[in-house]
Every structure is written in C-alpha cells, then in structure tokens.
Image (cartoon, protein in one colour):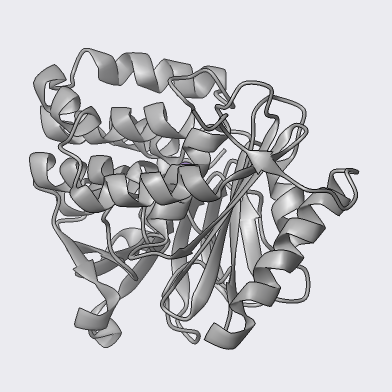
Length: 335
Ligand SMILES: [Mn+2]
C-alpha cells in the first residue's frame, strides 16, 4: 500500500496541481478530486484545480457540486502548461475515459479500477482494484496527513463511497467500511439529504418515459436503446433503473451524444461480470471499462450507422449471454 511519504515524494514542491477525473465524473470521482485538492492546499501549500471533460448533469451529482460548493473546471478552459504536477483520480492514463492530453507525464494515479498497462510515464501508482471506492483511498490519506476534513468535504467523500458501493452492499471491503464509518460522524446530514433527493427536470421524466417505452426484456436481460440524449449520464441513470426489474440479471442501455454511442452495462448480483460483457459489446468498435457489476463503453458513430450499431449491440448482448436471436417483450405489461 502506498504511504503518505511516497505521495510527498511526488507532490512536495508543487505550486499548481491539476487533478483530473474521468469525463462526466460521478460522485466518487468528484469527492476524490476534491479531497486531493484539500491535501495539496494544506500539506504542500500549493494550488489545485479539479479538471474534467464533459459536464455534470445527473441531478444528484449536480446537486452535490451545488450544495457542497465544489469548484470544477472544464478541460477546454485550462492551459495545461500552467500546472507543475498532474494527478488522476478514479481513472487511469490512456483508458480513453478522461481528457488528459497525450504527452503529459502523470505524477500520481489514485484509482480502484483494474490497473491498465500504459506506456506513459506515471511517477506513482496508488491503484487498489479490490477497494469499493477511490474516495476511501483518498480519505485514508487525508486522515493520515491530518488534513482538516470539514462537514462538506466529509459529505462528498461519504457520498462517493456510498454511491460506488451501493451503501456498502456491493463491492465494499473492510477499508471502505472503516472510512465510511469514520466519515459518518463528520458529515452534514442535511446536505446529504439535499443531494440524494434533488428536484428532477422535465427532461429527466421525458427520458424516463422514452426508456420505458423502448426497453425490451429477453428472459433475464433488458436492453434499451434510448436514442439521442443530452448527456451520456442519462444512459447510466436508466440502466441503474432497468436492472432492478424483477427477474433481471443483466441490463444494457445505449444512447447517442456528441458523435458517440454510450453503452452502460449492469449486472444484478455478485458473480457476474458487467466489465467483461461491456468489453465484448464494444470489441473492435470502441473502448470499455468498469467493475464487476457496473461497466460501460463508448463507440464513435455516424448518424447513418446508428440503427445498425444498435442492432449489433442487441445481437452481441444476447450472444454473449447465451440467449441467441429472439424477440424481446416490453419491460411492463401494457394496461
Ligand atoms: Mn469510483
């Protein structure tokens, strides 16, 4: 396990630190990045910025930024030359899911996804692929460094661990439990409640209605092609709902945004591998990554190819899960 002194080795002497998350960051990524900015500012007296590509639109995640006052910068608005250190959280270089420039040397990677071999120079890896959340790794470093974890930062880290482990129910290790409990007494319950139950836009319900009309169930598998979406986050949000249909073990959802098809995969229980299925779905056409129960991918697509790609994703899903070609039914009985 990486010690704080090793982090000192790569970050001390820094003046401006770029903290990159994956594009369209989730609560674990945002919380981890925010924790690292606190460490950088307090321990190294340097400035730090949270940077990512894409945006944050999912209601809970947008509420997290708003309620906790997390300051983030879009990668399009930064000059990477102004930073003398680069940290990646909840993502790794050259995976295709972050907007870090190709030729940048990375000083530190903090992550809990399986380690990806890369040719790029990384000075220090702290990748614990068995842990449930990057926020747990970051909380450990903050505690060891004696950094002041105030109620807002504690709430962010707690929410990061909570969402990535489904309230410690899935994929959590004893380390995640330990830091979740450590944070619990420090959080603002009022803020957490505001984050977990935000107002939902009309667009949110429109996408939901479309998902319910388009989703098809094949034995124990649900497949839903959402079509054009404002944000790839909608795809993840819908698949989280569909996998909860009773009798369902797998859910696959696609949607197009910004010239690419986003594909989200969920497995309902331990022992299945959403990551492996996502890899098969985008083989030869795109990138994928994720965890055992939650994974995703992205494939560039032109408008005239979308219908063909959707059919291919359905076909590949059924083939990979041993179902063969068949017709699907609606996820609910029409009344
Ligand atoms: Mn994570």
